Image: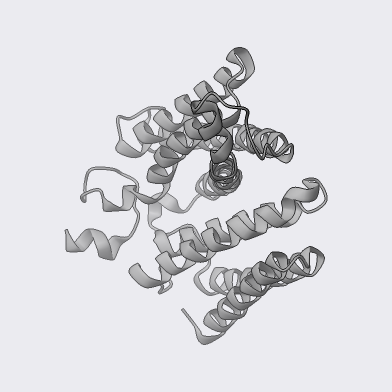
Length: 281
């Protein structure tokens, strides 16, 4: 990673922290501007890497965290006018998630520029990666909102368990619950496109749309669990804490499908993650 890449990313991180503390202080509008400025600086870091190596950031866990964190906060910025009073909550929960992702990639994985393998030199791979991050970002926001819902409604749950009247019921929790469901729906559509693109590219490489590969299998499991989550919500009225707990569980599988596969032993999947890590196994 070059000095200018590092500098741009450091400035982006500082601006994200500024947006967090501004939003925490109630200066949501200024927090939004700080968030947008951070996105611009991070995008410049991505652009320099892209131009330098000749491909979008799709190779290795560091580049994955670089893309995932940017798309996550981009979704937050685009939500500024549509989520009304929930924007502050999105900033306070998503900025730490994005920074943790970046720190994870920087601390544990190779940040040097690496060329793509022959099998990855395809626009199908680029679009597959694009839709994977377009799915991951809303899923992460839904997870943040579900986690907050569980925390904010804990007093109501305790009152219900004691068969007493609920206390401190917050009407905005219903809005948060609905917003999380909308993010889940949007992520599900993008996850479906990502899965279809991956299957199609598999047919090009191997002559078959399906292989019993761990990456395929875990992704399919996540897709089925997401479909079940949406189905239960629409047809069996699963909402509130029950829906929040369900999605927290589903997100653990989604999270593993994105970040856990790197620890599979070499040869267990045709997907290539971090070559240097595989060589250590």
